[in-house]
Amino acid sequence: MSGESIVILDSEQMRRVLTRMAHEILERNGGARDLLLVGVRTRGVPLARRLAERMGTIERVPIPVLELDAKPFRDDLPRQAGLPLPALPPLPVEGGRIVLVDDVLYTGRTVRAAIDALIRAGRPAAIQLAVLVDRGHRELPIRADYAGKNVPTARTEYISVRLLETDNLDEVRLVRPAGGGG
Image (cartoon, rainbow, N blue to C red; front, side):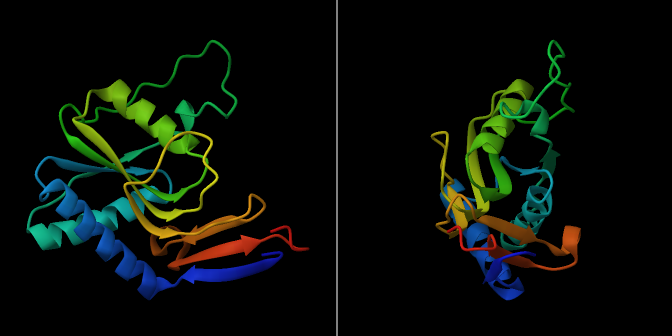
């Protein structure tokens, strides 16, 4: 990595943060009944699975997890003119309480796209947002209901999330570009 990088969550801190978030989700929802965790690809999916596993252990019931690719629903990525949005796989969202899970909340555009996709699939009773890191700089009025860590950043900085499932390492870093910039 070029520039400076600072570890803001190591594997043990990440474990504790996810355990706390699992308890917060269960407490706010009065348990696990009707909960569905939806992980946003790529790193939101393993985070959703980890949360579901912790919540399932606490409640002694399995918590369903689905994965969602929000990229086709983004309004800031080019899409071929005239092409319809892709068909979604069946998502059992009707009347359920959805916890959308992602790794980093930044501008809010991925979350907005994921919400659009979920609503196309049905009408959930509620959609909540859980993120490992909230770094600020929203472009849309979106906030996390559950945030593992709030990390104020400069726009030139970024958050690098690495997970065992995708990167063979659990770690979150704040990365500053070479030459300061932040």
